[in-house]
Amino acid sequence: MPSLLPLKTLADYFDAGKRKYNSLVSASKKSKRFPKFKSRKNRELTQISSTDENPLLLTEEIWSMVFDHCSPFDLLKMRQVNRNFKKLVQRRLNSLIYFDVVKCDLNEILAENQLSDGEFYRHSKSNLLLHLGERSAIVVVDDRWSSRDVYTVWHAVQTFSPYAHCVTLDVQIAELIIAGLSTVKLSRWYAFECYVQAVGSTSGQELHMKCSKTVVAKNALFPKLRELTIRSFPSDLTCLSRLADYGVSPDSVYNINQIELVRLNIVEMPTSVSRLSSFTSIEASRTKRPQKHLRIFKRWIGADLLKERYAQQYSQ
Amino acid sequence: MATESANGVSSPELNERDVVITTNDNRNFTVKIGVARVSKTINNMIQDLGESLDLSSGIPLPNVDGPIFEKVLEWCEEHKNAPEIKVEQDPHTRERKWFTMTEWEEEYFRKFLSHLWDLAMAANYLEIPSLYYYTCQKLAERIKGRTPEQIREMFGIEDDLTEEEKAEIRRTNVWCTY
Image (cartoon, rainbow over all chains, first blue to last red; front, side, top):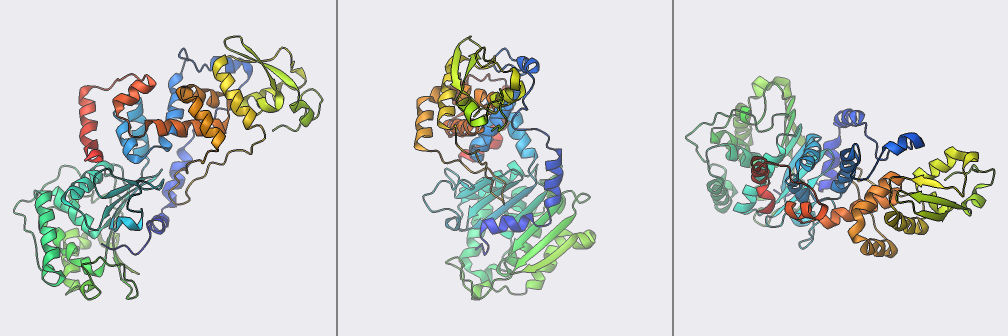
């Protein structure tokens, strides 16, 4: 999916209206980076050596600072070092609020042979970038994804899904997640996706992958989810109607009693913008019978049941 | 930095005076007060003790040993007039930006590469933000791309995870190395 907004602008956009979470979390944060100067008597008790009464407090502080400078891939691996490291990394993951998965041209974010710009880190083998901030995780997968990339994204989603409160997904990613939750093998789903691309947008719109089995999930993939935004270009609305094909209900994605907002964001493509992938064109960006796709999606997501918690947003 | 005098002497003049600092291995270091004040902990001691500060009998540092303090002093000498370090964050992501080090600082860490851990501990206790943040950044550079086993070995960390726990983490992390 071609992206119209640079990711940094996107992060700014996500921040709008969500500051209450930040302020809540900041208010609960009481630790101070440096210890206050203590009287000599008290200071005598604070040993740094191995005979320290409470060495972990200091060590955690330093490690936490070290982790601030680690790449997200390294950070996730740190959990394997020992219990203390695991706890520190887990604490960071627990403080996540926003999780965004974007499909776009990676070169728009990082130059082809650049491994990192300090914000986004390139995966060693897959066409994927990862950003892990204090409150947000962003996964970016390349427009021209491979079968391996599909699996990597799916596992990345599973890693961050238990912690996210506000999730924004490009519509192709939403379809990938639903396929991942279904009984369909992701390699087969990827082959289907390639076929849809190959036959072209006009014929591809009517192609559906039917799943015979219905999946009844024990737990929702995003157990803490409060806001779900699915972002789509008009040309990708067919993905929306395909979500209903996999035998996966929205209950498998989020807790219906907990969700506060399901937002469908349809991004209209300005005619002047030509950031389309090589295989698409302005002509192809039109979808036949968009209302039909929207109707199927709304029925699947249960827009009637969600009532005012379902919103459809059009933006440029 | 303090503007008030400790012994009724003006601040710039006081900064030029020597003070004896005693480390936990009973080593005495004669240091210019201006240099010692790079450490907020020592600066606070000087301010708190005020008139009662006896420059010759010295300030005890029971939590830092001599060889490490020697290295810390080298840093303080170089940074005695340096402005306070600025920790910058990206306004959108709130992620801390990496610091750019000078050639001297790079050389300093190259020289004391095997003492990064001790330096971080000492910088934390002595409240020297520049040394603390930079050392942590260097530690992060060192563990970049290392396996958990290598990190454990490097820092002498005990492996207290059960095999089940490790297998579970490995399973969830498998996508990081696909």
